[in-house]
Image (cartoon, rainbow, N blue to C red; front, side):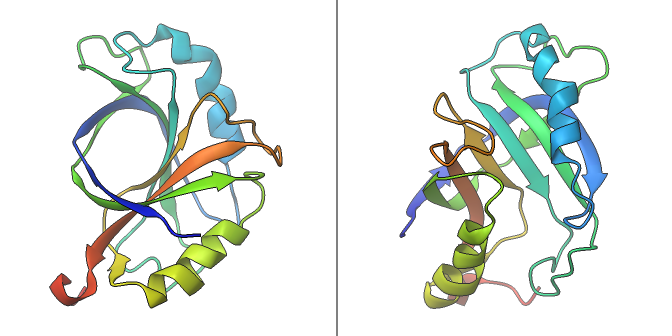
Length: 164
Protein backbone atom coordinates (compact mmCIF):
# COMPACT_ATOMS: atom_id res chain seq x y z
CA UNK A 1 0.00 0.00 0.00
CA UNK A 2 1.58 3.23 -1.15
CA UNK A 3 0.35 6.60 0.11
CA UNK A 4 -0.19 9.77 -1.81
CA UNK A 5 2.01 12.68 -0.73
CA UNK A 6 0.02 15.85 -0.01
CA UNK A 7 0.83 19.39 1.01
CA UNK A 8 -1.71 20.17 3.71
CA UNK A 9 -2.94 23.74 3.98
CA UNK A 10 -3.50 25.17 7.46
CA UNK A 11 -6.70 23.93 9.11
CA UNK A 12 -8.70 25.40 11.98
CA UNK A 13 -10.07 22.71 14.30
CA UNK A 14 -12.44 22.72 17.27
CA UNK A 15 -12.80 19.82 19.64
CA UNK A 16 -11.85 18.12 22.87
CA UNK A 17 -8.51 16.67 23.94
CA UNK A 18 -7.14 14.31 26.55
CA UNK A 19 -3.72 13.06 27.61
CA UNK A 20 -3.25 9.31 27.23
CA UNK A 21 -0.84 6.52 26.32
CA UNK A 22 -1.21 3.59 23.92
CA UNK A 23 -1.18 1.24 26.91
CA UNK A 24 -3.98 3.28 28.53
CA UNK A 25 -5.96 4.20 25.43
CA UNK A 26 -8.80 6.66 26.14
CA UNK A 27 -9.84 7.28 22.53
CA UNK A 28 -13.30 5.75 22.98
CA UNK A 29 -13.96 7.79 26.10
CA UNK A 30 -12.93 11.00 24.28
CA UNK A 31 -15.24 10.37 21.32
CA UNK A 32 -18.15 9.42 23.61
CA UNK A 33 -17.80 12.90 25.16
CA UNK A 34 -17.29 14.73 21.85
CA UNK A 35 -19.63 13.06 19.33
CA UNK A 36 -22.96 14.16 20.88
CA UNK A 37 -21.69 17.77 21.02
CA UNK A 38 -20.54 18.09 17.39
CA UNK A 39 -23.87 19.69 16.47
CA UNK A 40 -22.96 22.64 18.75
CA UNK A 41 -20.05 23.58 16.47
CA UNK A 42 -20.93 26.19 13.86
CA UNK A 43 -19.12 26.99 10.60
CA UNK A 44 -17.96 23.42 9.95
CA UNK A 45 -16.24 22.93 6.60
CA UNK A 46 -17.57 19.36 6.14
CA UNK A 47 -19.22 16.46 7.92
CA UNK A 48 -15.82 14.78 8.40
CA UNK A 49 -14.42 14.20 11.86
CA UNK A 50 -10.69 14.37 12.61
CA UNK A 51 -8.97 12.19 15.19
CA UNK A 52 -5.59 13.79 15.94
CA UNK A 53 -2.52 12.80 17.95
CA UNK A 54 0.23 15.17 19.13
CA UNK A 55 3.27 13.15 20.10
CA UNK A 56 6.29 14.43 22.03
CA UNK A 57 9.55 14.84 20.06
CA UNK A 58 11.34 11.55 19.33
CA UNK A 59 8.16 9.57 20.10
CA UNK A 60 8.77 7.11 17.26
CA UNK A 61 12.55 6.99 17.61
CA UNK A 62 12.23 6.02 21.27
CA UNK A 63 8.89 4.22 21.07
CA UNK A 64 7.31 3.15 24.33
CA UNK A 65 3.58 2.36 24.66
CA UNK A 66 3.60 4.09 28.06
CA UNK A 67 4.76 7.47 26.67
CA UNK A 68 2.04 10.08 27.11
CA UNK A 69 0.67 12.07 24.17
CA UNK A 70 -2.29 14.33 23.44
CA UNK A 71 -5.34 12.91 21.64
CA UNK A 72 -7.93 15.18 20.03
CA UNK A 73 -11.45 14.58 18.71
CA UNK A 74 -12.16 17.48 16.32
CA UNK A 75 -13.93 18.90 13.30
CA UNK A 76 -12.63 21.51 10.86
CA UNK A 77 -14.20 24.98 10.94
CA UNK A 78 -14.02 28.15 8.83
CA UNK A 79 -13.27 30.35 11.86
CA UNK A 80 -13.08 30.39 15.65
CA UNK A 81 -15.97 32.86 16.05
CA UNK A 82 -18.08 30.57 18.22
CA UNK A 83 -16.30 27.90 20.27
CA UNK A 84 -18.75 25.85 22.37
CA UNK A 85 -18.26 25.91 26.13
CA UNK A 86 -15.57 23.50 27.28
CA UNK A 87 -14.15 22.94 23.79
CA UNK A 88 -10.79 24.15 22.48
CA UNK A 89 -9.44 25.49 19.21
CA UNK A 90 -6.35 24.19 17.44
CA UNK A 91 -4.52 25.39 14.34
CA UNK A 92 -3.12 22.49 12.34
CA UNK A 93 -0.15 23.98 10.51
CA UNK A 94 0.56 23.34 6.85
CA UNK A 95 3.10 20.74 5.80
CA UNK A 96 3.80 17.53 3.89
CA UNK A 97 1.89 14.36 4.72
CA UNK A 98 1.84 10.77 3.55
CA UNK A 99 -1.85 9.90 3.21
CA UNK A 100 -2.92 6.27 3.41
CA UNK A 101 -6.44 5.31 2.29
CA UNK A 102 -7.25 2.60 4.81
CA UNK A 103 -10.12 0.13 4.74
CA UNK A 104 -10.53 -2.03 7.83
CA UNK A 105 -11.29 -1.98 11.51
CA UNK A 106 -9.91 0.91 13.55
CA UNK A 107 -9.09 -1.70 16.21
CA UNK A 108 -6.55 -3.34 13.85
CA UNK A 109 -3.15 -1.67 14.35
CA UNK A 110 -1.41 -3.59 11.53
CA UNK A 111 -1.68 -0.59 9.17
CA UNK A 112 0.46 1.46 11.57
CA UNK A 113 2.95 -1.40 11.91
CA UNK A 114 3.20 -1.45 8.09
CA UNK A 115 3.62 2.35 7.84
CA UNK A 116 6.33 2.65 10.50
CA UNK A 117 8.22 -0.63 10.03
CA UNK A 118 7.95 -1.17 6.26
CA UNK A 119 6.85 1.84 4.21
CA UNK A 120 8.66 4.63 6.08
CA UNK A 121 12.12 2.99 6.35
CA UNK A 122 12.00 2.17 2.60
CA UNK A 123 10.84 5.64 1.54
CA UNK A 124 12.67 8.94 1.05
CA UNK A 125 10.87 10.32 4.11
CA UNK A 126 10.94 10.29 7.87
CA UNK A 127 8.33 11.30 10.43
CA UNK A 128 8.15 15.04 11.04
CA UNK A 129 7.39 16.52 14.46
CA UNK A 130 3.84 17.66 13.71
CA UNK A 131 0.40 16.25 14.54
CA UNK A 132 -0.72 12.92 13.07
CA UNK A 133 -4.41 12.55 12.25
CA UNK A 134 -7.12 10.45 10.68
CA UNK A 135 -9.98 11.83 8.61
CA UNK A 136 -13.16 9.96 9.48
CA UNK A 137 -15.55 10.56 6.58
CA UNK A 138 -18.98 9.23 5.70
CA UNK A 139 -17.65 5.67 5.15
CA UNK A 140 -16.07 5.47 8.60
CA UNK A 141 -17.65 2.84 10.87
CA UNK A 142 -15.87 2.39 14.21
CA UNK A 143 -14.30 -1.09 14.61
CA UNK A 144 -15.99 -2.36 11.41
CA UNK A 145 -13.90 -4.32 8.85
CA UNK A 146 -15.61 -2.35 6.03
CA UNK A 147 -14.76 1.02 7.60
CA UNK A 148 -12.79 3.57 5.54
CA UNK A 149 -10.58 6.42 6.72
CA UNK A 150 -7.56 8.47 5.65
CA UNK A 151 -4.43 8.21 7.79
CA UNK A 152 -2.25 11.35 7.60
CA UNK A 153 1.39 10.92 8.72
CA UNK A 154 3.55 14.10 8.86
CA UNK A 155 6.71 13.63 6.80
CA UNK A 156 9.85 15.41 5.66
CA UNK A 157 12.49 14.34 3.19
CA UNK A 158 15.31 12.40 4.87
CA UNK A 159 18.08 14.53 3.37
CA UNK A 160 16.36 17.76 4.51
CA UNK A 161 15.78 16.56 8.05
CA UNK A 162 17.39 18.14 11.02
CA UNK A 163 19.10 15.92 13.58
CA UNK A 164 16.18 15.80 15.98
